[in-house]
Length: 212
Image 1 (cartoon, helix red, strand yellow):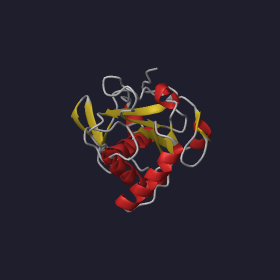
Image 2 (cartoon, one colour; image 1 turned 30 degrees about the vertical axis):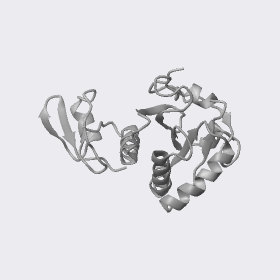
Image 3 (spheres, one colour; image 1 turned 45 degrees about the vertical axis):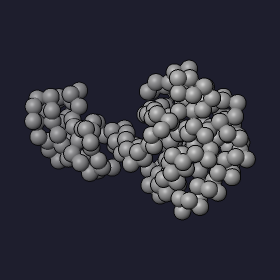
């Protein structure tokens, strides 16, 4: 199964480090970052899960829940969490899915045979409260993820869901944004962009970021 942006994130029931969960029920009305790692007790993954744990206050501010996955069993997850917390000086406050039967990995196309026939690649999905897939990033097994970029994209998604704007390349929260080409009516421009805008070209109009 290949997931695309805008698809409904597949629901599933699976064991995790905090007990068995039904994914959609667990997600509730939150945004979700679902990410897989190749295996427990591996160095890159240890740093990634540590970073995710430390970002909990930032995720909380954005109404985001994190959930990780690998094909290892629950007992291994629980032992590995001790290592993560010790080496990364943090507390892992999110569940890790024990996908030993590879059910979830199959639903989310996380196993790429040319990389590994058994281990998941570094897939990451951002899922909105309507259970729609909004972002898909897949890293090679040897490369750790940039979680600052994950937060940046969530900020952009939440902003553009609320306001009729788009974000330029390298945009960060607080930067100017772009007025979509679909908005052309002068009265609507005044209504939607009360801070005004600058037209660098007829197709490139920038305006200060709206209030969240």
